[in-house]
Image 1 (cartoon, rainbow, N blue to C red):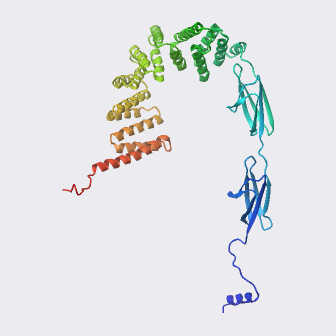
Image 2 (cartoon, rainbow, N blue to C red; image 1 turned 90 degrees about the vertical axis):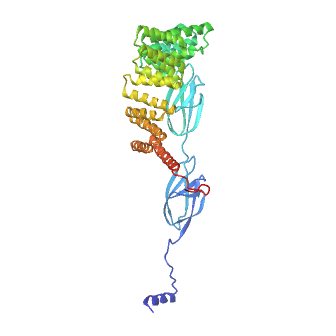
Image 3 (tube, rainbow, N blue to C red; image 1 turned 60 degrees about the vertical axis):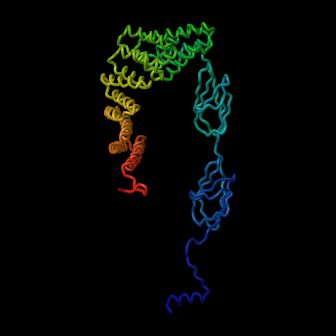
Length: 476
């Protein structure tokens, strides 16, 4: 008998039982309660249940408890679990909320909280998180007011005394800030509402002249021309129909005078020219352009006005003016290229091709010629002439003004090469694009094209491989 066995026998005779020590000694069923109940319990980040939580077993040790309930602050607690410490109770604190009461004199003003419309004064907003808020209110014929408030966990109030927009107020503002275009727009509006048409026209004239300098903010320019359009279309219901006709006549005269006074600059103010083409008949626009060109034979006014129509999609008017521009300035690249685009969009493809040829022979920046090459490639693709499209696209890529345009045009070239079954070259270009635009939108397009090329290669191989012989068609 070995020594170990003898020792074991002695222990048995003494009544000692040996239990192998494997795993934890015991598990403790814990209880977690909260006031109020209904909190979600996480133990060391793992979901355990909802309070009141009973019978959830943990080994003795230290744990991180997280208690979450909507409307209450999340509680993080470290607990020590033992045989004697297994019940845990916690008090949850309510998330602090604030209220804000907004009043104004006069009332019924629209209220914006951090830019979002929330109602009209008087207004009380509840359940707001404490913090800083921008409160803005506005009411027709009153100056908008803005106030920043700091809300604490209590009731808060803010009151606005609105200032009425009056003629005297805006006259004072124009005197103090003569370069602020919005003051002219608001004053002209007040004059129109009051029926003082001569004064409104005088202020409109000053506003239009200021807008043509290029210094005002774009939003202020847009607002001015919206007001002009409303006045021109008679939306203010000023007096009789004769009054509306007088307003239109005066506005046309003002705009004509401003443009003739400085045609180069005024016509470049796209918004001004855009409003002009909305207001006045096409024939009157041609007459004005002719007068300007008569005084200044090098003026690009025909091209500029034609470009407005082109942008708006009015192809007939655009072509009429751009044809006159090309006739007036036969060496002007922009006139020829814009007319080519107008023909192209009107599906006059042969005429467009001729004008693209003319434009490419004129002096211009390489980037501008690159755009023409690209537009010409679209024309060839529309006609199904893919070999010609490939040639001009290569020229476009060489003259691309920036990397983004170069990669985009390269992907257009890939599509043409796929049509021509030049798969190897198409693959090479896709890989170049992927390397240059790793992870970008064009990168994804290139990867899609690679998959498409692989499929087309497989289809082409299937077409070249003869079908296996069948019983009805035995091999020779």
